[in-house]
Amino acid sequence: MKITGMKERGGKVWAPRRGGSPVGELGFWRAAARGAIEVGGTPCFVFAADPLVEQVGRLEEAFAGLPVRHWWSFKTLPLRAVVEWWKRQGRPVEVVSEAELKAVLELGFEPGSILVNGPAKHAWLGGYAVEGLRVNFDSVAEIRVLGRVAKKRRWRVGARLSMATEENFEFPGVRAQFGLLAGEVSEAAVQMRKFGLEAEVVHFHLRTNVGEARYYRDAMACAMALAEGVGWSVSILDIGGGFPPGRICTRGGLPLDAGFSLASMRGVVAEALARYGLRELWMENGRWLTAPGAVLAIKVLDIKDDPARGARTLICDGGRTLQAMVATWEKHAITPLVDRRGRRVATLVHGPTCMAFDNLGLHDLPVGVKEGDVLLWWDAGAYQLSWETRFSHGLAAVAWVEGGRVTVVRHPGA
Ligand SMILES: Cc1ncc(COP(=O)(O)O)c(C=O)c1O
Image 1 (cartoon, rainbow, N blue to C red):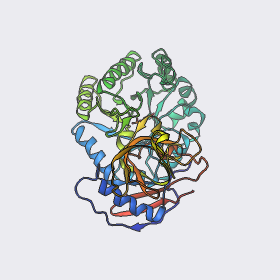
Image 2: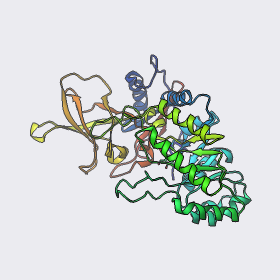
Image 3: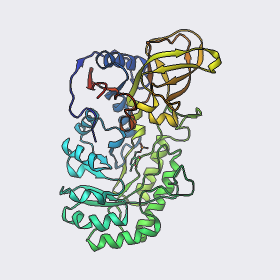
Image 4: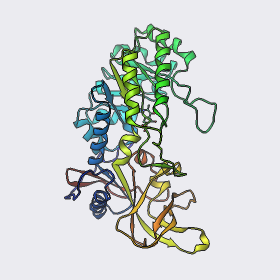
């Protein structure tokens, strides 16, 4: 696995001109994108610290006074500069693969601030003689294989439990592949005890874009009942991620966070801490935290204007196939880098690959958008770097904006 920006460095001093809050501020992103494109060209992911600082602030404010710990979901944004930024604040990181564990050890995270999640860890984790890791077991097989090393290396262990709402979205009625079913929890407890282990943590991750806080409440009750049933005295409940980000819509145009609020989550969390006598509650929000932390800058290469096509059609140097897999089910705003005049017309924005699939959706864009223009695709911070491809092209540039400096941490074509 290549952690973006792990080797390359190089920078440019850039004086941001922004007033007030950067989140939602077109001026901020335009200035940042200009600075980034000057060095890296397009397509370019422009990540910035300021919006992430805001999101962290919102989380902290929402759960102020409660023993809530936020873990960085590494897979959501495996960008070295941003993970280092997170680490400098003394915050912990959650990983789900061997490559991710290696990367965070290399970045200098203390084992106690590394949480190892994910399926099939027994295929690789036993080789890591790291003292004091935190590990959430995903299956009975994992416990059988890793129990001895977990005891020897004094890992603090937990168990991921499968919740009823975790349906496979492609195969309704079939559970997602993660965690222990209710019927497997007692065997998991037996296996752990063979090695002298007790689960200190119970964990679930419902899915991404959880629509309402009540789903968490129901899952908390279910997870705690399962733990109690096998005599685990759980002090930490890890509710995974899943908060839906603001501003992003379904492909059909409905806001993902229409039924969700941090205030409703606070209520659910405060109630759980008290009801279950928990010492801490953990969250691993990826998408909510990081989506607003970037824009994707792409250049218009060609325009097909004939009304017979049904929509104005732009062909750009970046798009869904290469950089924006989540555009398959999400609609993000698109804004030209410079103001363009004219009435707004239905415009289908495509990437450069030879696939009809390669589009960022149908948008109402000013008819004045022309060849050579740069478009900003908003809220590009979550999962895009993890999911990018080299389909017929190289990788996009990546820039990081922090403290008035734009650093191109990966040059295009890498
Ligand atoms: C275990 C776990 N934690 C956290 C996350 C982050 O989820 P999200 O980005 O929806 O917040 C995921 C995503 O798949 C996950 O599997």
